[in-house]
Length: 108
Image (cartoon, rainbow, N blue to C red; front, side, top):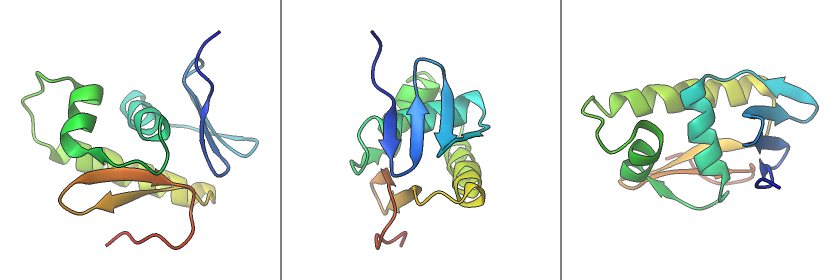
């Protein structure tokens, strides 16, 4: 039996099927967007450093710009917002990112 789907509020990340759900609706994401969500969703509320996300999603031999990560996070934030979920990706300044189920966290 595989790992249980990660969840943050009404957002579910099914790592076995590589599918993302908001309530009963599937959220269409790219392969890299899925990998970022799966990583952040593996421990909702925990902070993942930019380096950890880059190493885990793009691999440690990636020599491109970390702007690729910023672009991917930006697209995911827009998709999450458009879906109506309370889950969101929060920036922890100078550290990295965390997935929250909503509430009064700050994105500053």
